[in-house]
Length: 426
Image (cartoon, rainbow, N blue to C red; front, side):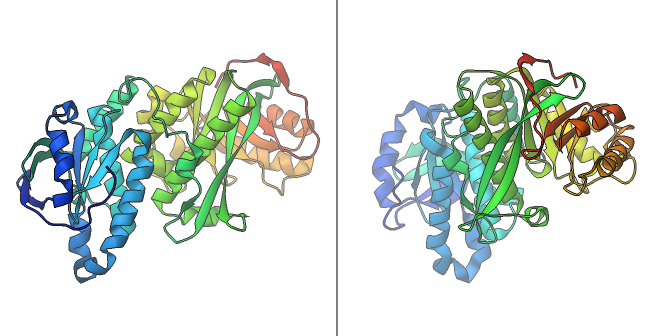
């Protein structure tokens, strides 16, 4: 059903008052759907690419095949095994998703169109996100009603929070690594996201509270790591993809390394860009639900890339994910030089930061830790320092007020208790 018709011809079909063209090759498929229960259940949608055709103007004929190819790749990736699609005309795609709820299926369609609009137009204005719920199919005509983007996405998030959407199960492809990585970034580079698991422990007791996921992005084929500055310049859709790839890789690695064993907790890194978008949160809900099955005490969401984020926007984003996480912490990119008052009352319960490579000696590390703890004091009592160089650094950090930490993979190693698992008392 995902084969595109050979040519666009046929009768006009009113869809929510908009004239469409129906391909003659699609008539048999439409006839099969006429009596299908998925039509009455609201699980058939029509996605329109009219905004792309209109904005491309005279360039549309030359780029039409490219748009169709990109749209179909996006549909295949987003829908996975639970959806089928068919191109009805040069701007219309019919999508059926019998294996998911009505709202989930509609949200997938909105996400697909939003991604394609951003790719070709640079933005996805709400007025250009045109998806119809198909309500009836006649001889050569399709009728339906236009979806309200905000209404569908908010209702779908609520449905997922209550355990619905996918019948209580996680989507078959959401944690598939192949779905998210490698991928072609908006600037033409081919990127691959990687993830390592690192034990995190309480500094006072050395009791392990779980693992944190360490993300990294590599440019292929040379496998060159992206710098922090390069990562910041990526498009929001690329950053979302990296977040999803990191989470899928981390969850798969956890299942491989400790099959059937539930960890005390997991620290999941999520960029603010992903967290602040409805599309990003929709996918994150699936990841959070998948991760919850692997922990005993709950999840810790670590919000990253916060430079320049307004406090109000951060509070709004953290409020929306609170039902899925036990704690929310902010990850700092750089050593703060003044109190972090902008992060106060934003829904955060802790801060995290990685030890700079330059903070090697006890004196250097002490100066770094003192600066972090002084800046964090007005905001949160919980401070996690990653990449400690050894037991002395752990002792210094704990004496200055840090609560949790992890050890760098090189240098002196400390034997962290695997028998004693403590509740992550953030």
